[in-house]
Image (cartoon, rainbow, N blue to C red; front, side):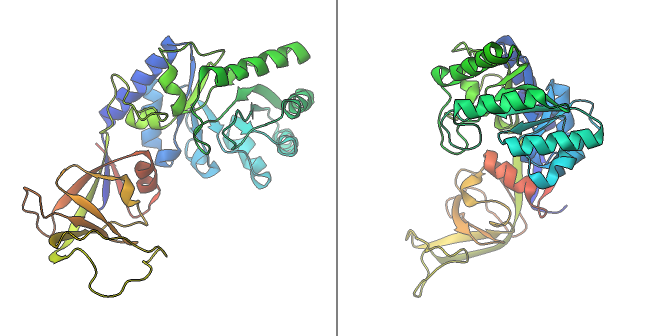
Length: 354
């Protein structure tokens, strides 16, 4: 066996997806997009999403959508298209999120050359200050232009919250999507099919607040770990332990807690801070910041302290452990969403679905 290794427990992930599909459907969200970027659109893992009942597979990268082209289900590009990739967008994505008229024009041209019609969701910025039209008139100008394009279909509107500005979705914020939807109806006599109310941060409202006309969510973390991302709460019927990172110990030594000479900057240009616990038993594992940040590592053995690391090494304090660890032993960690994303992206971490 090779390490480090990410073990994915298929039954747990499938159970999470089914639980969220049931929850969203019972609360009026009839269209659920499963975000695949966290596991780089691995087709075997994407298949779990499909079996769990998602209505589309969504990703930020064209490279990942290419891996999903054999799935007979809508594919959605989450990141705003680059001008340089519009030909690939209309080929590998059925739907894309957009907020720039110049890009929409290029998508229309690309779809025309490809002999297809491409669906677009126009993004509005409700205060999180990442992507989306911020001024209403700019949004309606884009709507007017798209409706005149021969090769684009205006599928709907959407928003994104908590990713940059950490703005928590509240009913009064999301209700503005109702206003936009009605504005399109009043001005252009056009009914938008999709009203996409955000990501895993909106899930906490389900069953508690009546969402406005929202009928779509784009979920990644909630399907993967069963947690909503506004407050980090576990949702009923889900499990966050479906992803376990395993790393092998390559050294065990007793050493001081604090470096013994003058210190400067570490390998990443930061000035480290040390806690003096005296001489401690320390283990090195073959896993580093090139694979995952220390903050995302949660040892299953709660007596282990993650001290820090460098590009290729992570240093653990095992002095208080009941287990007598030896060189060659495997240490297990559960991961947060960022940790799963990073380890799946690292080519040095094997992924095994069990």
